[in-house]
Length: 350
Image (cartoon, rainbow, N blue to C red; front, side, top):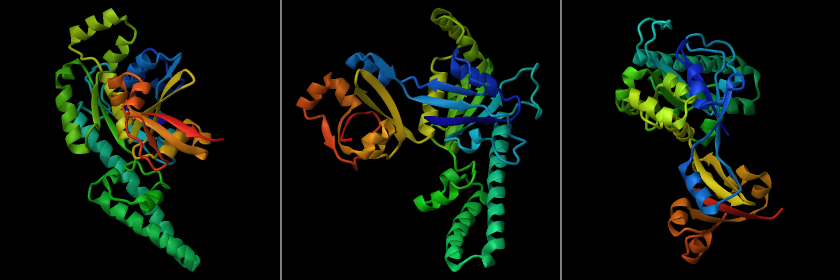
């Protein structure tokens, strides 16, 4: 399950966003588990007619810490998060004054970036100082290990000094393993959420394009969190009337959830067995054994092969039997790279 943590300056609307994400489901404390709305899963459910349908779920946390005051040990919800959701205030409300002065989301985004870069630089500097202090006290073998670590950290420091985020850095698997030992917040993917009011609804597309231009595809989403939270309490007919009155398009929360998935570097595959149709998420590039392990460790341990048909092919021909007849159902080995939208049956022995 993807673990996402909200982070923003005070009064950015994180609590309201969490309520909007729940769409009527209340958070347990500061944690909310959300089903991913999945049109492909819905289509497969109509095809297979299973008794049970289980979507992918995402966990959103709203820890009691804000930008502008990060210090000491981070809450586990942030330190262990797969994704940081940066909530940027873009709404005006005279009853909730912005503690940083006039509402300026682009200023706040730049300041948030700077704070997280400085956080990472401080961690790296402390570790490099510690390496220097212990250099003459360790064995040659340990010194060689520390030398490799120091080289990676110095590269990361240089990259941050030049204004880059570590997610954009070129680090191989071994170097990335070194960096994962630290609570580096620019090494985590970010989803930037502009929390807008009704005045910015016509600018949603332009806002998201500007964020994407700087931070990459699917990196930003503009959501009217207060309006979306209010909508969750209405009937479908009332929601349609409400959206028409405000010019608020559908799909804002869905778009946020899907971008959270993509920014986390995950893809979806599907299984149908024992009258349960289920969606699963795995890292992009995962092989068939890793996907089997996501379903059950026994499947990975005893993996034999996987029967695979892509969602597009399956829904086009209408059944597994027809996909098999047309040669669209393939047998794949353990090194097969799972594709987003694969429908898989794992063959294994216990």
